[in-house]
Amino acid sequence: MRLELHDNEYKVSAEGLTVELLPKEFALLRFLYLNRGRTFSREQLLDKVWPLEYPVERTVDDHIYRLRKKLGGFRGLTIRTIRGLGYSLAVIDTAGSLIPPSIQDTALHETMREVFVKYHQYGQGISMQTLARQQDVLGYELDPFYAVYVHFVQGDLEWLLHTTEAPLRDRLYSLMLFFMFTGDPVDRLASCELMLEREILPQFQHQELKILNILDLYAVVGKTDKALERLKLTYTVIQEPEYENFELPVAISEMFVHLAAGTPDVQVAAMLGDIEERLRARPFLRESGSYNITKGLWKLRQKNWRDGEALLDEGLQILEISGFVPLFLQGLHRIVNCGVIFSFPQALQDKYRKMFEAEQVARGLDRWLRPLEAIIRGAIHPL
Image 1 (cartoon, rainbow, N blue to C red):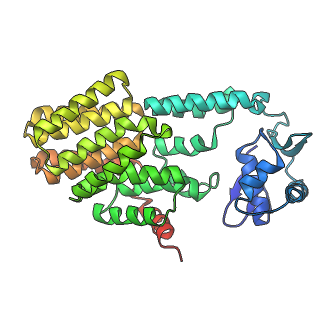
Image 2: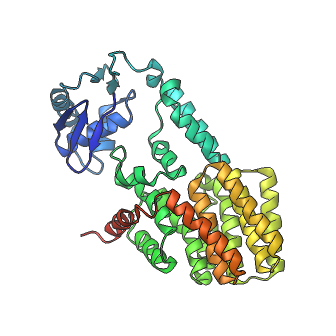
Image 3: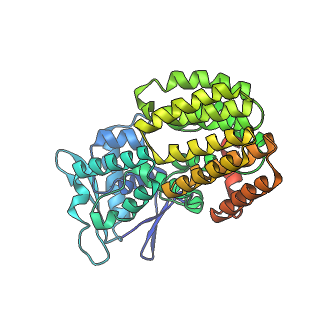
C-alpha cells in the first residue's frame, strides 16, 4: 500500500480514500511514512517534527492518538506503540499481509545505506538505480536522502518538481543544479549567489554549491578571478572529514577554471599529472569522465582538434555509462560554453550544442523549464 501525500493541502490519499489533517499531524505522518518500519522515541519525533519548538512529550501522544482516529479508514496502516521505545508505522499490502519483516531490521537499513554511499563514491549511478528499484524484492527501505538522490542521478526532473514524497527543501538543491544547465549563465550565476546569500539550502548542500558547483558559472561568464578566489575557501573546507571525497571533483573543477582563465599550458599540464595520479588510486567513473572532458578542452585550446574531440567523446561516454545524468549535462555545458570562449571550429560547436539540446529535451528541461524557474525564483524571492 502506498500513500499519496498532498503537501499544499495537508491531505493523504490511498485506495480511493482521502483524509484531511492538521499541519503537524501531516508532518508527523510524513516522517513516519518515509521511515516506515523504524521505531522512534517521543524525543526523536519532537526533534524531527517540531524543530526549534518546545512542546512537551505529551504533544506526540496527542498527535498519535488523533492520527490513529483519522487514519482508521486505511486498513493498510497501523501506528504501533513499541513499549519502552516509542512509535512505528507499519504498512500492510493490499492482500493484507505484512510487508517483509526485514523492513524493520535497522542493521540491514544501515548496511544498505552504506552500499549506496559506496556506489555514490565510485560514481556508479546505474548501480544505485538498480538497487533502488529492487527494494521491495530485497525487503529494505531506501534511506530518505537516497530516495531523492536516485531521482536526481537518473535525471528525473518531473519527479523532482512534482513529487509529494519529499519536501521541497530536500529537492531544491537538485532542482538548482538542473536550473544551472539552462538559459543564460549570467542569470544563473546571479540566482546561485542569491540562494547562497539567503542561506536557503540545508547546510551541507549550501556548502557544496558555494565551494564547488558555482565555480563552473564563474568560469564560463568570465569571472575566473572570483572562481580562483573562491577556490581558496574550497580547499580549506575540504580538509574537513565529511568532504574527503571532494578532492578529485575540486581538482577537476580547478583545472576547468584555469583553462577558462587562460593559465599557461605548463601549469595546466602539472594539474593534469596530479589528477591522473589521483585517478590511478581512485578510478571513480564520474571523475574519470569529467577529467577526460577537461583534458579534451585543453587539447582543443591548443587547437589539437582530433585528440581533443576524441577525449570529449570518450569522457561523455564514460559519464553516460556511469548513469549520472547531471554530470553528463555538466560535461556538455562545459563543452558548449568553452566552444564559444575558445572559438572552436563551427562544426565542433554545432556538434556539441546539438547534443546538449537533445539531452535537455530528453530530460524534460524544455517542457519543465517554466515550473523549474518558478520554483527557483520563488525560493530566492519569497513573497
